[in-house]
Structure formats: structure tokens, C-alpha cells
Image 1 (cartoon, each protein chain N blue to C red):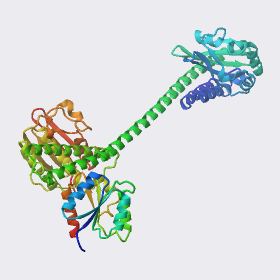
Image 2 (image 1 turned 90 degrees about the vertical axis):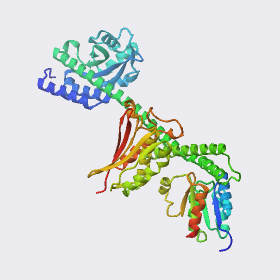
Image 3 (image 1 turned 45 degrees about the vertical axis):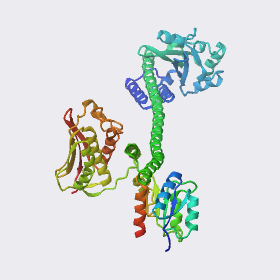
Image 4 (image 1 turned 180 degrees about the horizontal axis):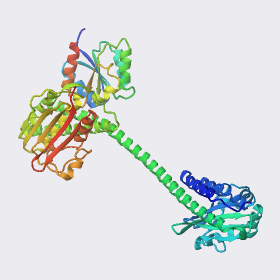
Amino acid sequence: MSSKFDSSRLIKVILSLQSLILNTLDYDKVISKIANTLLFDAGFINLGYRIIVLTLVDENQRTLNRISLSKTEEAQKTQEVSVVPFHKIEIPLRSEGNILIKAIKNKKSYHTNYWPDLFRPILKDKDAIANQNAAGIKTSLVMPILVRNKSIGALIFSMIKDYSEVSKQELILIKAFTDIVSLAVQNSKLYSSTKTLASKLKVANSHLKELDKMKDEFISIASHELKTPLSIAKNNLWMYQNTAKKEIDEKNKRFLTETESSLTRLQSIINELLDISRIQQGRMMFDISPNNIYELTIEVTKSFEKLAHKNHIDLILPEKIKVEADVDPVKYKEVVENLISNAVKYSGSGSVRISIEKDNKNFKVSVTDSGPGIDKKDYSKIFTKFGRATQGLKLDGTGTSTGLGLYIAKSYIRAMNGKIGFTSQLGKGTAFFFTLPIKK
Amino acid sequence: MSGKTKILIVEDEQSLREIYTEYLKASGYEIISAADGQEALEKAKGIAGIDIILLDVMLPKIDGITVLKELKADPKTKKIPVYLMTVLSLKDLEKKDTKSEADGYIIKDTMNPEQIKELIEKTLKK
């Protein structure tokens, strides 16, 4: 039996223990590995140490529980004879006459040569003694495990020698070892709570994904279901307006016109919801081809001439410019239509100017209105779903909007490798613009 | 060819079926109507001289796409122009791989009966 340690070997052992703590996160594994390191690598087995036990406080149950046990022959023997299995030995924290509880309460180490001190009140004294005899243990040393000056558990070092034979050096090492175990326990606890949290987050995330999918499907199905009654209403209305035998009087004509424009509004809302659903499900298809940008833009702009005139808005057309670009013409026109429609809605009476510029790489289309401008607090909402400015929206039939248009426009422009944005001045107006690459 | 142009209208929504029937009858066509996919196939195969078929996509019993495929697979009916009637937009239809088989589309919520009539006239002139 060598009773001397060489200090370089000890440093090595401590270092290997530290790396063990950092690399092994499973409770049981880390403790048994640490125990093995101490017993076999640090040579404690040669000093008569046979069993190392980790106990931890269960704050909910208010008990001290056996957690981990060294994989040694003697440990095996006590387990074989014990009337209560190792993991069932849960000692109430208010127990008296148990030195584990005493060590925890007083944050001091104790030793005993009488195992009932370690097992009361779970085991009868005679059963505890039987366990002790099975392993031939003479002395058990109990070390509290402290974290920030609070006891979280205790380590039991059992040996086949008397306490008087324990050297000061051994005690120092046992103390160091206990500190390492404390670190390991904190580490594992942190890890397992992170793991629990992570798995909870995973569950929450999959719930959210499912909800999101349901929401997308709902929009898609609902939109289709809405379109059938819509087409019935529109077709019936059309029949009445176009095939009525009797002349419809002015008042009733107005009712019908109102109905018609409401249905058209409903239709565009449904279409926007469908587009959103397509965008979100990644099902939006782009049919890109080389297009004459000036012509596409003029076509859309001219379609607003009637409405602009009705609203006393001076619609200023872009100057002729030669720009060819790879775009999806349908979606390009939808974007331009959306920007002009917004400008007309928000502009009151004044002007809406559409312009096209280009440089070597990109062209830029701007739609500038003379409306009330956008309040800075609304800036972040502009391109979001259902987001819209609070100011200046006219609440008659022409001014209602779903707030989906710019979200869709942004998705389209991005998908065609462009950028969309705006500048605004309160009281003066707003300019929405987008840039897209021109054809090389 | 003798007599009126025969159009088979397949539409499960009664109101739309009646509107299309009434309008096209008034325009001088002979109309046969069916309310589901099975009836559509029976009439398309059983009645001689159908000039054009307007076929709803979402139908009870046998859906419109299947009806279309069967019509186009049968030598007796494959030459009859078939227009698919739908509330789906063209964006959706293009993905459904029916483009090659259908002779055209009628988007029910955007086209009025007059536009449908014009489409039929255009097809018959071909």
C-alpha cells in the first residue's frame, strides 16, 4: 500500500477530472467516472477506499436521495444484501441521528464506523450493519457538497481502515474531489434543465408549426369556399342588370351598383388572402420572361385614368423610356397596380406621379402622391401583413383596404430580385418605389 | 351538321347551372345540363352531336378532372372541346397539369355569362 502521492500525478488526475466534468453531462456516468478516477487513477483503492456514494437533496420531497454508486466489488456486495434497493434509500431531511443529514445541515464533514448512522430511519440498525459487514467497511467519511455555501448533497467515502489511518493529504484530496463533484453536479443539473427546456421548446415549436400549417390550409380552403357563393352572387346580379325586362329606376340602379362594387371588393380580398397563402406555403410560381417595362407600366397607369379623374387626381404618366427586364408580367403589373391604387386612395385630391428611371444595372419605378404622408410610428407596419397607416385613409368605398397589398408587393419584388421602399413627408406626400435589375 | 349548337353544361351549383342555361338558351343554343361527374359522362357519351362541354372542376361523385381525362381518352368524345369551369385562378390551374387536356378555362368569379358566350362563339368559329 503506497501512502504517498506524487503531486504531478495528482495534478494530472484533477485535470482529467475537470475535462470529464466538461465532457460528460449524464449524472450517473459523470459521478461513477469521477469515483473510478479517484479510486483507480489517483490510487485511493490502494489506500483502502472501497465505496464512493453520491447523495443529493430533493428539494420537493425534502429528502436526501442516493444517486450514484462507485462500480466496485464492495459496492456490489452491499447492494446484494441490502433489504432496500440503493435508489429507494431516501432519507427525510428532518431525520435525526443520521450523519448525512447532520453534514448537510452543519456543512461539515463527519465520519462513522457504524453504518446505521448513514441509513436511519430507512434501514433498521441490524440491516444497516449487515450491509456494512457484507463489504467489510470499517469507516465512512461524509463530505457535504456545497454550492455557494448551500448544501446540495453529500459524498460518502467508505474504507476498510480506521479513521486514524486517514492522512491529512488524503483529506485534502477528498475535499478537492468533493469540490469537483459539486461542479459536476451543477453542470449536469444545468444540462438536464436545459435539455428539459429544449424539449419543451421543441414541442411548443411543433405545435406552432402545425397551427401555422392549419392556418395556411384554412385560408386556402376558405378562400375557395368563399369564391363559389361569390360567383353565384355576381352572376345573378349580372343577369339582373343585363337581362331585366323592365327598366330599372335610378335608385334601384344605385343599389345594384353598390352591391356590385361590394362584391368586387370582396373578390379582391379573397384573392389577396389566396396570394398570401400561396406566398406562405411557398407555392407562388413566377413566370419570368423579358418584358418591356415602359409598356407594362403605362398599361397599368392608364387603367387608373377614370378613377383618378373621378377623384380629381392629376395622374401624371411616366415619360417614355426604353427598359427591358426579366419579370413575371402579371405580378409586375399587380405591384404597380397596388402602388398606384394606394396612392389614389391616400392622396385625397392632388397628384399621383408615376416615373421610371434607370442606371446600368437597375430600373426604378416610383409612385409619388401628394397625400398626408406616413407617420414615423407607422413606418414599421407598412410592409407587414394587415399593416396600414392610420392617417389619410379614406373610408368610403374606394378607400377600404385589407393592408395585404404591400406585403404581397414586397414578396413579389423580392422574388424577382428587387427592392421596395418608400420615402414620406408628413403633410407633403409619399413616394413608394421599387428597383429591379434590367436585362443585360 | 344540322340544327342548333349543342352545349353540355356540367355544374353542381343549381343557381349557376340555371343562369348559364338560361343565358345560353336565350342566345340560341341547345343546352343539356348535368349536376355531377357521373351524369356528365353518361350524357357526353350517350347523346350524339354535342359541340362543346362546359365542365365544372369540383363535382360530386366523379370530379371534373377525372371526367375530362375520360372524355379525352374516349375516341367518341375526345374531339369535343372542353372548357373547365372553376373558381381556382390560372395560377393554381397551371400546376394541376390539366393544361394540355382542357381546351380552355372559365373562371367563374371573374367571367360573366356574356363573356362565356363570346368564348363559345370564338371556339365554334375555329
